[in-house]
Length: 401
Image 1 (cartoon, rainbow, N blue to C red):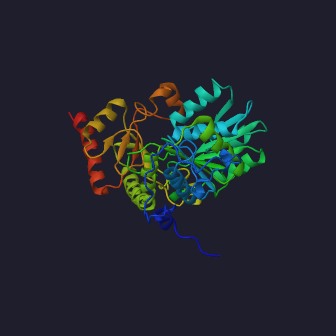
Image 2 (cartoon, rainbow, N blue to C red):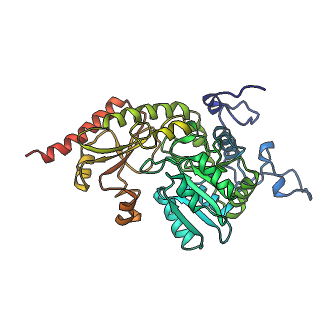
Image 3 (cartoon, helix red, strand yellow):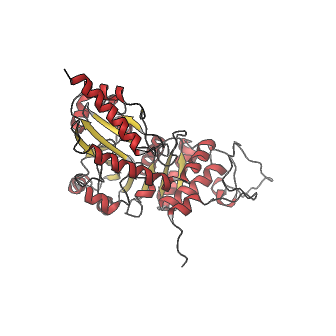
Protein backbone atom coordinates (compact mmCIF):
# COMPACT_ATOMS: atom_id res chain seq x y z
CA UNK A 1 0.00 0.00 0.00
CA UNK A 2 1.41 3.36 -1.01
CA UNK A 3 2.12 5.64 1.94
CA UNK A 4 -0.04 8.77 2.10
CA UNK A 5 1.74 12.06 1.54
CA UNK A 6 2.17 14.42 4.50
CA UNK A 7 -0.41 17.12 5.29
CA UNK A 8 1.68 20.00 3.91
CA UNK A 9 2.29 18.13 0.65
CA UNK A 10 -1.39 17.32 0.16
CA UNK A 11 -2.35 20.91 0.99
CA UNK A 12 -0.17 22.26 -1.81
CA UNK A 13 -1.14 19.63 -4.40
CA UNK A 14 -3.66 20.61 -7.08
CA UNK A 15 -6.80 18.51 -6.93
CA UNK A 16 -8.28 18.99 -10.38
CA UNK A 17 -6.74 18.78 -13.84
CA UNK A 18 -8.48 21.17 -16.22
CA UNK A 19 -6.38 20.05 -19.15
CA UNK A 20 -4.29 23.21 -19.39
CA UNK A 21 -1.54 22.46 -16.88
CA UNK A 22 -2.98 24.78 -14.21
CA UNK A 23 -1.04 24.65 -10.94
CA UNK A 24 -3.96 26.41 -9.22
CA UNK A 25 -7.65 25.98 -9.96
CA UNK A 26 -8.98 28.89 -12.04
CA UNK A 27 -12.05 30.88 -11.05
CA UNK A 28 -15.07 29.60 -12.97
CA UNK A 29 -17.75 32.29 -12.91
CA UNK A 30 -20.26 30.82 -15.34
CA UNK A 31 -23.69 30.32 -13.81
CA UNK A 32 -24.73 27.67 -16.34
CA UNK A 33 -23.08 25.15 -18.67
CA UNK A 34 -23.74 24.16 -22.27
CA UNK A 35 -25.12 20.68 -22.99
CA UNK A 36 -24.31 18.61 -26.07
CA UNK A 37 -27.93 17.69 -26.65
CA UNK A 38 -31.15 16.37 -25.14
CA UNK A 39 -30.71 13.18 -23.12
CA UNK A 40 -34.04 11.68 -22.00
CA UNK A 41 -32.20 9.45 -19.55
CA UNK A 42 -30.33 12.24 -17.74
CA UNK A 43 -31.18 13.16 -14.14
CA UNK A 44 -29.67 15.78 -11.87
CA UNK A 45 -28.28 13.03 -9.64
CA UNK A 46 -26.28 11.66 -12.58
CA UNK A 47 -24.34 14.89 -13.17
CA UNK A 48 -20.86 14.10 -11.81
CA UNK A 49 -18.53 17.05 -11.10
CA UNK A 50 -15.76 14.56 -10.45
CA UNK A 51 -15.98 13.54 -14.09
CA UNK A 52 -15.99 17.17 -15.26
CA UNK A 53 -19.76 17.32 -15.68
CA UNK A 54 -21.55 20.54 -14.72
CA UNK A 55 -25.07 21.78 -15.36
CA UNK A 56 -25.91 24.79 -13.19
CA UNK A 57 -23.89 26.81 -10.68
CA UNK A 58 -26.21 26.17 -7.75
CA UNK A 59 -25.76 22.43 -8.19
CA UNK A 60 -22.01 22.47 -8.72
CA UNK A 61 -19.19 24.74 -9.86
CA UNK A 62 -15.69 23.69 -10.98
CA UNK A 63 -13.86 26.00 -8.57
CA UNK A 64 -16.06 25.03 -5.65
CA UNK A 65 -15.77 21.36 -6.52
CA UNK A 66 -11.98 21.60 -6.56
CA UNK A 67 -11.81 23.16 -3.09
CA UNK A 68 -14.32 20.63 -1.74
CA UNK A 69 -11.99 17.85 -2.89
CA UNK A 70 -9.16 19.64 -1.12
CA UNK A 71 -11.19 20.03 2.08
CA UNK A 72 -12.27 16.39 2.14
CA UNK A 73 -8.69 15.20 1.83
CA UNK A 74 -7.25 17.48 4.51
CA UNK A 75 -10.08 16.82 6.99
CA UNK A 76 -9.96 13.05 6.50
CA UNK A 77 -13.43 12.67 5.02
CA UNK A 78 -15.02 11.22 1.91
CA UNK A 79 -17.08 14.24 0.88
CA UNK A 80 -16.96 17.97 1.62
CA UNK A 81 -19.44 20.76 0.96
CA UNK A 82 -18.52 24.46 0.79
CA UNK A 83 -21.05 27.07 1.95
CA UNK A 84 -21.52 30.82 1.90
CA UNK A 85 -20.61 31.08 5.61
CA UNK A 86 -19.84 29.00 8.66
CA UNK A 87 -23.33 29.73 9.97
CA UNK A 88 -24.83 28.43 6.73
CA UNK A 89 -22.80 25.24 7.05
CA UNK A 90 -23.94 24.57 10.62
CA UNK A 91 -27.58 25.35 9.84
CA UNK A 92 -27.46 22.96 6.89
CA UNK A 93 -25.90 20.24 9.02
CA UNK A 94 -28.68 20.51 11.59
CA UNK A 95 -31.49 20.65 9.02
CA UNK A 96 -30.00 17.66 7.21
CA UNK A 97 -29.98 15.24 10.14
CA UNK A 98 -32.70 16.18 12.65
CA UNK A 99 -36.36 15.26 12.29
CA UNK A 100 -39.49 16.66 13.89
CA UNK A 101 -39.52 15.80 17.58
CA UNK A 102 -35.76 15.21 17.81
CA UNK A 103 -33.63 16.37 20.69
CA UNK A 104 -30.42 18.33 20.09
CA UNK A 105 -27.69 18.20 22.74
CA UNK A 106 -25.05 20.92 22.45
CA UNK A 107 -22.07 22.34 24.34
CA UNK A 108 -23.19 25.28 26.49
CA UNK A 109 -20.07 27.27 25.54
CA UNK A 110 -20.83 27.41 21.81
CA UNK A 111 -19.91 30.47 19.76
CA UNK A 112 -22.61 33.05 20.49
CA UNK A 113 -23.89 33.09 16.91
CA UNK A 114 -24.29 29.31 16.89
CA UNK A 115 -26.01 29.32 20.26
CA UNK A 116 -28.48 31.98 19.14
CA UNK A 117 -29.24 29.89 16.06
CA UNK A 118 -29.93 26.83 18.19
CA UNK A 119 -32.10 28.83 20.61
CA UNK A 120 -33.99 31.26 18.41
CA UNK A 121 -34.33 29.19 15.23
CA UNK A 122 -34.25 25.50 16.10
CA UNK A 123 -35.79 25.70 19.58
CA UNK A 124 -38.09 28.73 19.61
CA UNK A 125 -39.28 28.79 15.98
CA UNK A 126 -38.98 25.17 14.82
CA UNK A 127 -39.79 23.52 18.14
CA UNK A 128 -36.81 21.23 18.65
CA UNK A 129 -35.86 20.22 22.17
CA UNK A 130 -32.41 21.78 22.58
CA UNK A 131 -30.34 20.97 25.67
CA UNK A 132 -27.14 22.87 26.44
CA UNK A 133 -24.70 21.00 28.67
CA UNK A 134 -21.27 21.48 30.19
CA UNK A 135 -19.54 19.06 27.83
CA UNK A 136 -16.24 19.28 29.66
CA UNK A 137 -17.76 16.50 31.79
CA UNK A 138 -18.56 13.52 29.56
CA UNK A 139 -20.98 12.11 32.15
CA UNK A 140 -23.12 15.23 31.81
CA UNK A 141 -23.35 14.67 28.06
CA UNK A 142 -24.25 11.02 28.63
CA UNK A 143 -27.08 12.02 30.98
CA UNK A 144 -28.50 14.43 28.39
CA UNK A 145 -28.39 12.14 25.35
CA UNK A 146 -31.35 9.76 25.03
CA UNK A 147 -33.24 7.77 22.43
CA UNK A 148 -34.93 10.93 21.15
CA UNK A 149 -31.63 12.66 20.43
CA UNK A 150 -31.03 13.19 16.74
CA UNK A 151 -27.92 15.36 16.96
CA UNK A 152 -25.07 15.94 19.39
CA UNK A 153 -23.24 19.16 18.52
CA UNK A 154 -19.90 20.09 20.03
CA UNK A 155 -17.30 22.80 19.56
CA UNK A 156 -13.77 22.12 20.79
CA UNK A 157 -11.88 24.25 21.66
CA UNK A 158 -14.73 26.63 22.41
CA UNK A 159 -15.17 30.33 21.80
CA UNK A 160 -14.14 32.33 23.81
CA UNK A 161 -13.19 30.35 26.94
CA UNK A 162 -11.08 27.74 25.11
CA UNK A 163 -12.82 24.78 26.75
CA UNK A 164 -12.47 21.24 25.40
CA UNK A 165 -14.62 18.14 25.28
CA UNK A 166 -13.57 14.52 24.78
CA UNK A 167 -14.44 13.84 21.14
CA UNK A 168 -13.84 10.09 21.25
CA UNK A 169 -15.89 9.53 24.39
CA UNK A 170 -18.81 11.65 23.16
CA UNK A 171 -18.70 9.86 19.79
CA UNK A 172 -19.37 6.60 21.62
CA UNK A 173 -22.29 8.14 23.52
CA UNK A 174 -23.86 9.46 20.31
CA UNK A 175 -23.35 6.14 18.52
CA UNK A 176 -24.99 4.21 21.37
CA UNK A 177 -28.16 6.28 20.81
CA UNK A 178 -27.97 6.40 16.98
CA UNK A 179 -27.50 10.17 17.11
CA UNK A 180 -25.42 12.06 14.56
CA UNK A 181 -22.34 13.61 16.15
CA UNK A 182 -21.09 16.91 14.75
CA UNK A 183 -17.98 18.85 15.78
CA UNK A 184 -17.15 22.46 14.98
CA UNK A 185 -13.40 22.25 14.41
CA UNK A 186 -12.84 25.90 13.47
CA UNK A 187 -10.41 26.80 16.27
CA UNK A 188 -8.10 23.80 15.83
CA UNK A 189 -8.29 23.40 12.03
CA UNK A 190 -7.64 20.03 10.37
CA UNK A 191 -3.94 20.57 10.92
CA UNK A 192 -4.21 20.24 14.70
CA UNK A 193 -7.33 18.08 15.12
CA UNK A 194 -9.15 15.39 13.12
CA UNK A 195 -12.63 14.85 14.64
CA UNK A 196 -13.72 12.34 11.98
CA UNK A 197 -10.77 10.15 12.89
CA UNK A 198 -11.86 10.39 16.54
CA UNK A 199 -15.42 9.24 15.79
CA UNK A 200 -17.41 12.31 14.69
CA UNK A 201 -19.91 11.86 11.85
CA UNK A 202 -19.57 15.37 10.43
CA UNK A 203 -17.12 18.19 11.03
CA UNK A 204 -17.82 21.89 10.47
CA UNK A 205 -15.51 24.81 9.79
CA UNK A 206 -15.95 28.50 9.40
CA UNK A 207 -13.54 28.66 6.49
CA UNK A 208 -13.48 32.42 7.01
CA UNK A 209 -11.01 31.71 9.80
CA UNK A 210 -7.85 29.60 9.58
CA UNK A 211 -8.64 27.73 6.38
CA UNK A 212 -8.80 30.94 4.35
CA UNK A 213 -6.34 32.57 6.71
CA UNK A 214 -6.15 36.02 5.16
CA UNK A 215 -9.34 37.76 6.34
CA UNK A 216 -10.54 38.28 2.77
CA UNK A 217 -13.19 35.63 2.20
CA UNK A 218 -16.35 34.41 3.95
CA UNK A 219 -17.28 30.75 3.91
CA UNK A 220 -18.08 27.54 5.72
CA UNK A 221 -17.62 23.84 5.15
CA UNK A 222 -18.96 20.46 6.20
CA UNK A 223 -16.93 17.27 5.81
CA UNK A 224 -18.23 13.77 6.44
CA UNK A 225 -17.40 10.13 5.86
CA UNK A 226 -21.02 8.99 6.38
CA UNK A 227 -22.78 8.48 3.01
CA UNK A 228 -26.26 9.02 4.46
CA UNK A 229 -25.26 12.29 6.09
CA UNK A 230 -23.49 13.34 2.88
CA UNK A 231 -26.58 12.64 0.78
CA UNK A 232 -28.79 14.71 3.06
CA UNK A 233 -26.32 17.61 3.22
CA UNK A 234 -25.86 17.59 -0.55
CA UNK A 235 -29.60 17.73 -1.19
CA UNK A 236 -30.15 20.59 1.26
CA UNK A 237 -27.18 22.56 -0.03
CA UNK A 238 -28.00 22.23 -3.72
CA UNK A 239 -31.79 22.00 -3.81
CA UNK A 240 -33.26 22.94 -0.45
CA UNK A 241 -31.27 25.95 0.75
CA UNK A 242 -29.06 27.09 -2.11
CA UNK A 243 -26.38 28.49 0.22
CA UNK A 244 -23.26 27.47 -1.70
CA UNK A 245 -19.90 29.18 -1.55
CA UNK A 246 -19.38 31.59 -4.48
CA UNK A 247 -16.56 30.77 -6.94
CA UNK A 248 -14.30 33.66 -5.94
CA UNK A 249 -14.47 32.75 -2.24
CA UNK A 250 -13.77 29.13 -3.19
CA UNK A 251 -10.66 30.28 -5.06
CA UNK A 252 -9.48 32.31 -2.06
CA UNK A 253 -10.12 29.35 0.22
CA UNK A 254 -8.11 27.02 -2.00
CA UNK A 255 -5.29 29.57 -2.00
CA UNK A 256 -5.35 29.73 1.80
CA UNK A 257 -5.42 25.98 2.32
CA UNK A 258 -2.10 25.58 0.57
CA UNK A 259 -0.28 27.35 3.41
CA UNK A 260 -2.47 26.12 6.28
CA UNK A 261 0.17 23.93 7.93
CA UNK A 262 2.90 26.55 7.66
CA UNK A 263 0.65 29.24 9.12
CA UNK A 264 -0.70 27.07 11.93
CA UNK A 265 2.79 26.29 13.15
CA UNK A 266 3.57 30.00 13.46
CA UNK A 267 0.18 30.80 15.00
CA UNK A 268 0.73 28.14 17.64
CA UNK A 269 4.33 29.09 18.37
CA UNK A 270 3.38 32.72 18.89
CA UNK A 271 0.30 31.83 20.95
CA UNK A 272 2.30 29.54 23.22
CA UNK A 273 4.91 32.23 23.85
CA UNK A 274 2.29 34.91 24.51
CA UNK A 275 0.28 32.63 26.81
CA UNK A 276 3.40 31.90 28.85
CA UNK A 277 4.23 35.61 28.93
CA UNK A 278 0.71 36.55 30.12
CA UNK A 279 0.48 33.73 32.64
CA UNK A 280 1.40 35.27 36.00
CA UNK A 281 1.63 38.86 34.68
CA UNK A 282 0.58 41.27 37.41
CA UNK A 283 -2.05 42.91 35.18
CA UNK A 284 -3.59 39.55 34.20
CA UNK A 285 -5.87 37.53 36.47
CA UNK A 286 -6.32 34.44 34.23
CA UNK A 287 -5.08 32.93 30.96
CA UNK A 288 -6.98 30.33 28.94
CA UNK A 289 -4.84 28.32 26.52
CA UNK A 290 -4.70 24.50 26.32
CA UNK A 291 -0.96 24.54 25.71
CA UNK A 292 -0.36 25.72 29.28
CA UNK A 293 0.02 22.94 31.82
CA UNK A 294 -2.19 25.02 34.11
CA UNK A 295 -5.13 24.62 31.72
CA UNK A 296 -7.51 22.11 33.38
CA UNK A 297 -7.83 20.14 30.13
CA UNK A 298 -4.20 20.26 29.05
CA UNK A 299 -3.89 16.45 29.17
CA UNK A 300 -6.98 16.01 26.98
CA UNK A 301 -5.57 18.51 24.49
CA UNK A 302 -2.36 16.49 24.32
CA UNK A 303 -4.38 13.31 23.68
CA UNK A 304 -6.75 14.44 20.93
CA UNK A 305 -4.93 17.36 19.31
CA UNK A 306 -1.64 17.57 17.43
CA UNK A 307 -1.12 21.14 18.61
CA UNK A 308 -2.81 23.78 20.73
CA UNK A 309 -3.90 26.32 18.13
CA UNK A 310 -3.50 30.05 17.77
CA UNK A 311 -6.30 31.42 19.97
CA UNK A 312 -5.94 32.31 23.64
CA UNK A 313 -8.10 34.27 26.05
CA UNK A 314 -7.11 36.21 29.13
CA UNK A 315 -8.70 38.37 31.79
CA UNK A 316 -7.34 41.66 32.98
CA UNK A 317 -7.23 42.34 36.70
CA UNK A 318 -10.06 44.85 36.45
CA UNK A 319 -13.32 45.57 34.69
CA UNK A 320 -14.77 47.47 31.75
CA UNK A 321 -12.80 50.67 32.43
CA UNK A 322 -9.51 48.77 32.49
CA UNK A 323 -10.45 46.95 29.28
CA UNK A 324 -11.09 50.25 27.53
CA UNK A 325 -7.76 51.69 28.63
CA UNK A 326 -5.86 48.56 27.58
CA UNK A 327 -7.33 48.75 24.06
CA UNK A 328 -6.48 52.45 23.82
CA UNK A 329 -2.84 51.60 24.49
CA UNK A 330 -2.26 48.94 21.81
CA UNK A 331 -0.96 49.83 18.34
CA UNK A 332 0.14 46.70 16.45
CA UNK A 333 -2.82 44.45 17.17
CA UNK A 334 -6.26 45.05 15.65
CA UNK A 335 -9.48 45.41 17.65
CA UNK A 336 -11.83 43.36 15.47
CA UNK A 337 -14.15 40.38 15.44
CA UNK A 338 -13.27 37.12 13.68
CA UNK A 339 -10.05 35.13 13.99
CA UNK A 340 -7.62 32.93 12.11
CA UNK A 341 -6.06 35.55 9.83
CA UNK A 342 -2.36 36.28 9.50
CA UNK A 343 -2.84 39.45 11.55
CA UNK A 344 -3.42 39.44 15.32
CA UNK A 345 -7.00 40.30 16.25
CA UNK A 346 -8.13 41.42 19.70
CA UNK A 347 -11.76 40.69 20.55
CA UNK A 348 -13.60 41.95 23.62
CA UNK A 349 -16.48 39.42 23.85
CA UNK A 350 -18.65 41.41 26.27
CA UNK A 351 -19.02 44.30 23.82
CA UNK A 352 -18.42 42.48 20.53
CA UNK A 353 -19.12 38.83 19.67
CA UNK A 354 -21.09 37.96 22.83
CA UNK A 355 -22.86 41.27 23.40
CA UNK A 356 -26.16 39.98 21.91
CA UNK A 357 -26.61 37.26 24.55
CA UNK A 358 -26.88 39.82 27.36
CA UNK A 359 -25.00 40.44 30.61
CA UNK A 360 -26.85 37.80 32.64
CA UNK A 361 -26.08 34.99 30.20
CA UNK A 362 -22.47 36.15 29.85
CA UNK A 363 -22.08 36.01 33.62
CA UNK A 364 -23.46 32.46 33.65
CA UNK A 365 -20.90 31.44 31.04
CA UNK A 366 -18.03 33.17 32.82
CA UNK A 367 -17.53 35.88 30.19
CA UNK A 368 -16.51 38.92 32.21
CA UNK A 369 -16.09 42.55 31.17
CA UNK A 370 -12.33 42.10 31.41
CA UNK A 371 -12.11 39.04 29.16
CA UNK A 372 -10.20 39.33 25.88
CA UNK A 373 -9.87 36.73 23.12
CA UNK A 374 -6.68 37.01 21.09
CA UNK A 375 -6.37 35.45 17.65
CA UNK A 376 -2.60 35.40 17.50
CA UNK A 377 -1.23 36.19 14.06
CA UNK A 378 2.06 35.39 12.38
CA UNK A 379 3.82 38.69 13.17
CA UNK A 380 7.12 38.63 15.03
CA UNK A 381 6.16 37.69 18.57
CA UNK A 382 8.59 40.27 19.98
CA UNK A 383 6.47 43.01 18.43
CA UNK A 384 3.29 41.46 19.83
CA UNK A 385 4.76 41.36 23.33
CA UNK A 386 5.78 45.00 22.95
CA UNK A 387 2.20 45.87 22.04
CA UNK A 388 0.89 44.10 25.13
CA UNK A 389 3.33 46.13 27.18
CA UNK A 390 1.94 49.32 25.64
CA UNK A 391 -1.53 48.23 26.70
CA UNK A 392 -0.38 47.42 30.21
CA UNK A 393 1.44 50.75 30.51
CA UNK A 394 -1.83 52.48 29.60
CA UNK A 395 -3.34 50.79 32.67
CA UNK A 396 -0.48 51.88 34.88
CA UNK A 397 -0.67 55.47 33.65
CA UNK A 398 -4.29 55.75 34.79
CA UNK A 399 -3.70 54.21 38.21
CA UNK A 400 -0.50 56.02 39.18
CA UNK A 401 -1.25 59.03 41.45
